[in-house]
Image 1 (cartoon, rainbow, N blue to C red):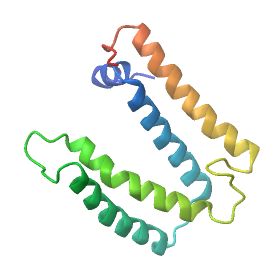
Image 2: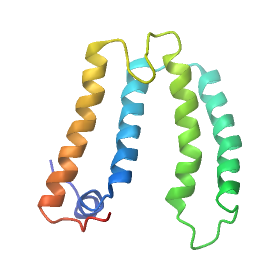
Image 3: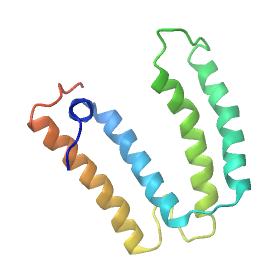
Length: 134
């Protein structure tokens, strides 16, 4: 599989905190794929919560969005509440302990995907495709 050079540089230079955030996203997407519910109510409620909490989070960091503001940071401030609320709705009553699924196969998939991602990042670092930052 060929990964574009720009993505190789990005992933090869990921700081530890961003690696963790990517693993959170991978875990969320794995869980959403296993327990997807097409009910509009789940997704509309999650969008509403995302908008409400996202605005509060923007206000908590000073409330000013200017040309120099990191657009990805602002996006994450809205994405995280969406993911949390939809995750909660999708796993309700399915035997999860905190964020751990009851089904061993599902747990293995989520852990495996995160481990593969971390291995990819480490491989890209060793290949020198990115300059590691803190």
